[in-house]
Length: 327
Ligand code: DAH
Image 1 (cartoon, rainbow, N blue to C red):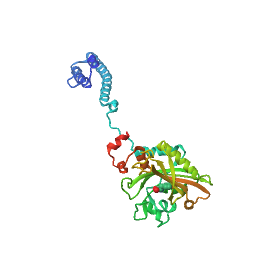
Image 2: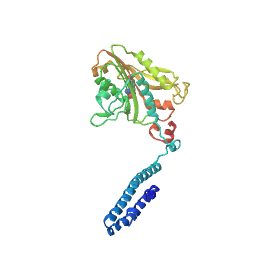
Image 3: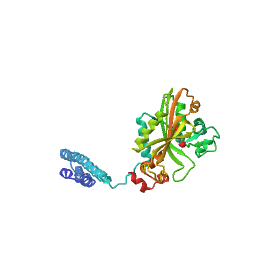
Image 4: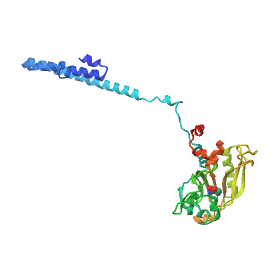
């Protein structure tokens, strides 16, 4: 019996052997039954032998049981095992969206220049989105952006510029920040979607340390980092919260400045707005004796120019034929 136990290969086999030996009609059970016909010394001796046989069997059984249970578990694990080599080439791995990679590239640049990353709410109030940015009620410049309003005078922020105000209200200069995030406008055509992303930038120092030349130098380096070997030009412009203000163009990445359909034969593409912070803005946040510059850019526009994507709307359609090119 013990040798049978030792050579059992499966748990079922082992169980069978146990039943044959110790079950109701098992060999040993039947031997135990004979005890009732015996007396005295003879009975005692026979009982000892049977008990010994039963103990030996149980001992061998327990050892084998543990061994076979382990074996069964190992086999089960082998069946469940994942073959990771299977995923090597055949799987359909996703990719980061071009808006995300462009955003990352921009953030990485300013991060390396020690700019902090600030956030503000998407649902803004009139004070942060307009008034404190030097856009009083009924000022015509409010029409520069088609804003989504709620009934209670809150609105979907139309620009990331309100994060400038929130940051200046909660921190003291020096400030070096960018604010990446979504913005909303009532607009929809080949170059506009109702939701898009901007990155705002703001630098404020005490005294008169910061001027337009610093802004120009910083943005030129940034645009060359983003677009490589391009020419950069600053055009006078107007934003209510900067004075002087400028719009910045790069030489067209499609035609290298020769003139094409995308740059409307001008050789230039507008990429961002910027300027020296208007002193009026400091009055709203209680800053005195400071100087600073600000800029704002559209992330989708950057992504379109970086990847030569002609229609802004395709960024939001989730068409796999477009997306899988960015794997
Ligand atoms: N907020 C402006 C817009 O959405 C962009 C902008 C222009 C931001 C000039 C700035 C700036 O910080 O200085 O059109």
